[in-house]
Amino acid sequence: MKTISVIDPLTGNKLHEISAHSKVEVGLKFQAGRDAQVAWANRPAKERARIANRIAGLLVEREEQILNLLQRETGKAKSHAFEELTGALGAVAYYAKTVAGLMRRKRVRAGVPFMISAFVEPAPVGVVGIITPWNYPLALTMMDVIPALMAGNAVVQKADNQTAKTVQLARDLSVEAGIPEEIWQIVHGDATEVGNAVTDNADFVAFTGSTATGKLVAARAASRLVGYSLELGGKNPMIVLPGADLEKAAETAIGGAFGNSGQLCVAIERLYVSNRDLQEFELILKRRVESLKLGSSHNFDFDLGALTSAAQLERVSGFVDRAKQEGALVLTGGHALLDLGPNFYAPTVITQIPQGAEILHKEVFGPVIALVGYEGLDQAIELANASEYGLNASVVGNRKQALSVASKLMAGSVNINEGYRATMASMAAPMGGMKQSGMGRRSGPQGLLRFTETRTIGVSNNFPIKLPTRARQYLRLAPIMTKLVGWIGKL
Image (cartoon, rainbow, N blue to C red; front, side, top):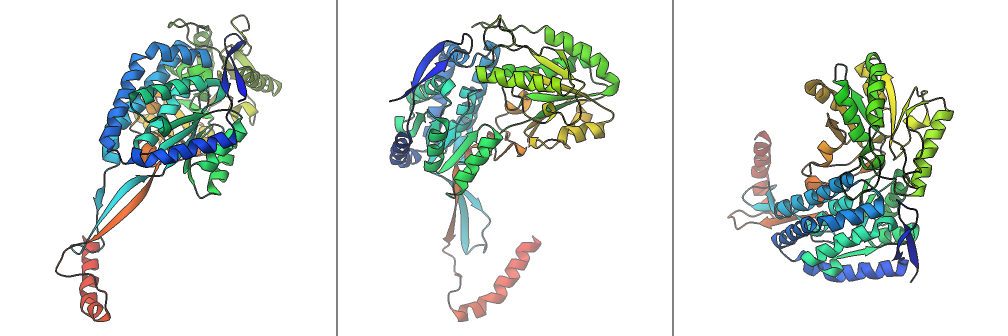
């Protein structure tokens, strides 16, 4: 079997090797999952929920082991690794609590009262293919895999090569808690070969990644009439309202933009501040950004860690260099910190950005804020919405005014006086994007029900009057049924 070398983000040396699966091996795993899925689906939802609760317990029990591995593979600071673990725990706990109600058969209004009854119930789709990225391997795994499993499906997950061992650990703990081995299987290897094989074998595909790749996944799934959900890119804006506390706004912006060193789909990348406050805000933001501590530690010593790969460092550096070439000014940062390690990059703020510059429209996916002034709130809203993306947004300032502005932003989630955590941590609320930022939702009831098909059951009741089958019966019942339908409509 071919192997793949995984590189340590903190040193640039080889961290470990993982196996590279083939298209044939992916197909065999789907078959094994399909063979085991019916028995898993036949287990009561409450029994599956008990297993989920045991998974949550093991995540807490093995916290240090999980955090250490997560940091080794991603290079992120312990604070951001801890946030990721809490996100994973939140997802598991939420679906453990709600799966029984979500999967219950429910009575609905029947077309002809008394004569018939009608029910709807969700049914698992079969074997779900889940494709997860490297930036949040634990949280995004549990946010997608756990609801798919709780709905009664089997899962074949393509883990990103860089963080495959973190995903494998999550899976192994879940098997220890009671998930059958064939019900959750993991593959990795060549992104195109393995990713396409997952899409080509799945009964539903959940993909998290770039918009460009998401479009390819959607086309491939649609050609088989297979459902899919997509959580894609973002170019997320934050609007600081006139009159906002600028010190608090700057700190909120830092939290929203530099979580996981900006390697987060919902991270803030565009920051809009009133022109009358812009000069003062620049000084405040610069001071606060330059006070951030970068480094690597298994303690809560540093605010930011490293970027996860040399490719990420090259990507971020390229965006900043091109912004300068287009005439923008680097207020702070804008360079690698090679004395800390091969993939550290200084948190960066860019100002005086020409209209139409790349940095305002394309996703950087790194610790870079594009700071822009605005004249009035209408212009701020227009600028915030001037993007092909619509994943996340933020409004900072007076709560009542912020809520009014939030309702005008074309984004799947909007945070008030927070960057992204207020919505992302709310597991009962759906999370996903508008426009080119995706289709479907994770979290909330929709996060589980996307992995199901709806079955409708109609019952002919034991009632003295039956639905007609002969012409003479229609002659007698038609006037009554017409009046009945009209009566129901009035009610």
